Length: 195
Ligand SMILES: [Fe+2]
Ligand SMILES: [Fe+2]
Image (cartoon, rainbow, N blue to C red; front, side):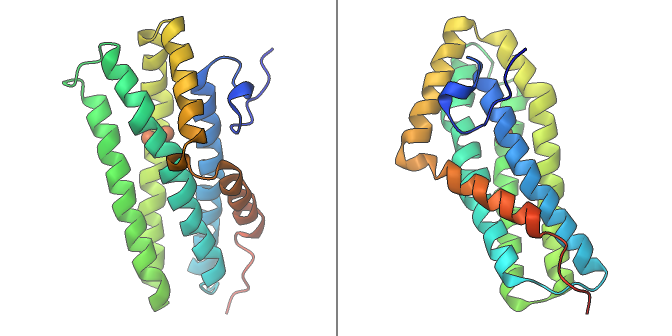
């Protein structure tokens, strides 16, 4: 039986780089679920907790976008193109477009926060959560099986090394801090008292 991947170290992936991405999706889903729960609390009168949302935005910028999406764009997508996935195959273009849409949706959350308008923040977070959930589902169900089909063992090893190099680079972001933020958000979500 394979050990579950911690999503943090290149040595924990059982030799399968896709395990790392699936584990990162798990961390992102934890934070996204927490954001959705916090919004559910706000729908029934919970206040806007600026500190919670500042850390949620920091998580989305630093972990979801910087540690994860950028790694897919810098390492995974080029490896699939090099392995013969045609640029005419719509999946990579669609997924890269979804990354851009998520960045735009997060910008709307960032804009809504200081104004303290509850409805605006709820709408913005709802949009971001829906986009990211759909994106993760598409990658898990459609893209990742394709990676196993297209890349031979040597290609998977190169991917693993590419991920480790990206994680260690200045572009890679702080993975451990991102995981800590996700855990904090999960612990604190939905605990504001209704007004
Ligand atoms: Fe992605
Ligand atoms: Fe992803």
